[in-house]
Structures are given as structure tokens and as C-alpha cells.
Amino acid sequence: MYAILDIETTGGKFNEEGITEIAIYKYDGHKVIDQFITLVNPEREIQPFVVNLTGINNNMLKSAPKFYEVAKRIIELTEDCIIVAHNAEFDYRILRTEFKRLGYDFKRKSLCTVELAKDLIPNQASYSLGKLVRSLGIPVTDRHRANGDALATVKLFKLLQTKDSAKHIIQSSIKESYKAKKIDSRFIDIVNNLPSVTGVYYMHNADGQIIYIGKSRNIKRRVNQHFTATNSKSKKLQLRVDSVTYEETGSELVALLKEIEEIKRVKPMFNRSRKRTLFTHALYAFTDQNGYLNLKIDVADGRKHPITTFSNHQSAKHFLEQAAEQYQLCLKLTGLEKTENTCFNYKIDICHGACISQESPELYNRRVQELIEKFSYAHQNMVIIDRGRDVDERSAIYIKDGSFQGIGFFNLNYQINNINVLESIITKMDNNKDIQHVIQSYLRKHKRLKIIKLT
Image 1: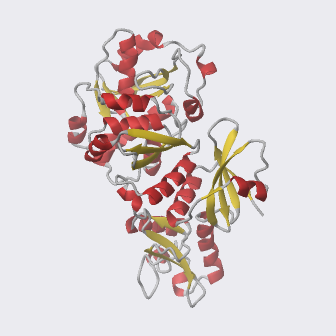
Image 2: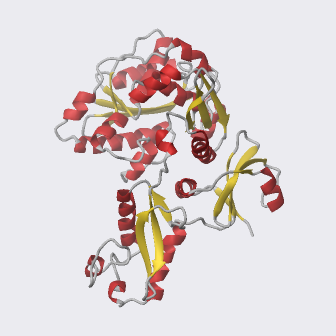
């Protein structure tokens, strides 16, 4: 029997967080047989970062039950169950902390769907819940709310069960007892002095040299993970870290862009992957002698203008195969199939005959152009508006002539579509294919971002 759950918290200092919402689904291995979903009054303030992330604010929780009022129901629902959660260590720790405040020793076996997914579905781009379930075609609603995330975890766990038909991996992954990851005492002050905000953090050695740069939507939590992790890289970091500084950005996109530029500039010893170009392959377009727009996957070349870029050839090929089906493109003209005659897509009525000049270049090129436009910047001159560092501020990402110019922050009263004002607040940054890929990917995933077209 499993208790699949998700918890939202107030944020704050390690082991001082309070629960704001909890959702539990009791699952017998085949179907959900019971459930419990409630807001919880944490009797403490919610961090502004968490309010922005979850939408749960202090006013919503004034009339919600306190944890001691729902504790009995949680104990009953999870009794004789294995706790299942995405990053189970976090949710289980929070539950144990709340029960400890009541003088009750809450102990359950636990199972982490992050660890399971890494074993059963390897080579995913990300194992965060939102990105993972989207890549697997699992629908998710109310992201960053307990019920939405718990339901997504139920669906993910069902999929993982089918992947592990013999149940060997799932059984071997169950943690029999709780073992809290202890943080070295010399790191406690460092973590306590960091905020739970979005931004870029810098780890320094005793000489003040930057040895690692990272970005996070919750700097405090991410740095704490570095200090409690037991993998080889983390252990080496722990031996050398003497202090941590940070820069708040408010916007995750701004943090991503600053992280890339800072790593390329500083070249910290523990950021080897970012020292290299992340996107090694690209998709290019050219017109052949018959007037058809062809697509081609090639090694990324900074002198050429790509449609989009990829971390490896396989991901580029997978993207192009999906695009060929979606836009009804010819496999021959996309370079996916070498043939002198008709391509396979023509035989199954996806391609309309461009491979044998049966479809006119004008009609075929129109669909290729749709693909190109979708994966190019929406406008050659524009400003992307995102969150700022406080409620009265916004961030601006400036694109000019199809090229990234830099970032800036402005007050809500500014007329940001005034070019002179805009260029005065922008901090110039380098443009490269890594930056372009990050911005395009972010825009595809965050379609509600405000974009101002500039003339």
C-alpha cells in the first residue's frame, strides 16, 4: 500500500518551514482508494517567493485547520503505507518535523519517484516533476499546488510501475528507515544567511576565488542540497567552499542568462559542463536547385544562423522527426532519409510529394516557414517582460535585430517601450547560441510572458 503525497510549505530556514497545503492519495498498487487534501494554517508567515510560486498567501490560510487538527487523519491514512513523493526526502522530512513539534515520532518507509525515474527512464533532460511529466505526456494541472503535483505523481508512479514489471527496482528503492542528512556545522551559518529567492549564487574558496556558479528558484534550498549531497562532485565542493554570495534576479530566465554568461567569463573549476558550448548541433535551412526549402541537422557553427540548437545529434533528430510529422514534411528534404525516389512519409500520405516535385515549392515552403517562425524569436525587435526582484519591479530581456542585447530591471511606472529609456537600463551581455537556445526554450514553455514588440 502506498501513500502518494505532495506538500507545499512556507519556505524559510531549514527545519523551520511550516506546511501550507498537503494532498495524500492512498494507492493500493492499482487504483486510488482514499484521499485527503487540505490547506493548513502554518502559524507563521509565508516567504514572498513561495507566494509567487504557489499562489497560496497568508489570508487564504487564516481559517484553515492547524497541523495538529489534521495530524490524526494523516497518521491513519499513511499507516502501513510506503510514503511516495517526488523528492520524497523533502516531503518526508517536513512531515517528520511537523510531527516532532507535536511530540510524535512519525516513521514510515519511503520511496522517491525522482530516483525511480532516473533508474527506469534514463537520459531525460530534467527530472523535475513538471518537466518530466510533460516530456512523458502526463497531464498536470495546478502546478506547484499540493493536489495538482500529488495527482501528477500518482500518474507518474503508475507509469514507473509498468516500466518495472518485475518490481525489482521499486522494491530495492524503498528506504526502510529515516536517516536525516546532516549538514556540517560550518555550513549552517552560510545556509541560514541565504534567502529563498530566485537568482544566481557563487561559491568561493578560502581565498575568495569563485569555484562554482549556479542558479536556482530557491537559492537557500539549492545550496543546502550541495552541502548535504553525498555524490563525488558535492563532496569535493564541500571540502573547498568557504563562503557563498548571491545575486537576486526574481526571474528564472534572467538567472539562466546570467549563469551562462558568468560561467563563460569566470570559468569556475566545478562548472566544467558549462565551460563548453552546451548546444553542439543545430537545425539549418537552405533552398535547393528546385526552389524547395530543405532542413539539415549539422554541427553548430557560430557563423551561421540556426533555426534552433540541440545538446546532441540524437535530440536534434528526434525533434526533426516529430516536426516532419506535425508539419507534413518530406523526409528526403529534411535529410532524414536518403532516397532517389519517394520518401516513406509519401507512402503513408504525410508528405504531399515534394520529394518527386509533385507538390509545388510554394505550398511546401509555406509549411517549412511555419516551423521556422515557431522556433525563431516572435519579433526581431522586442522586450520580454518577466518578474523583478520585488513586487514593484519587472525584468526586461532585450532583443534587437534578432540578437540578444542584455537584461535590465525597471519600475512599473517606466514606459519600457521607449527605446531610449530601454537602452539606458539594459546591461549589455554577449549573444551566443547557448543564450538563443535558452531564451527560445523558455518562451516555448512560458507562453504567458508579456512581450512588447518594438518598431
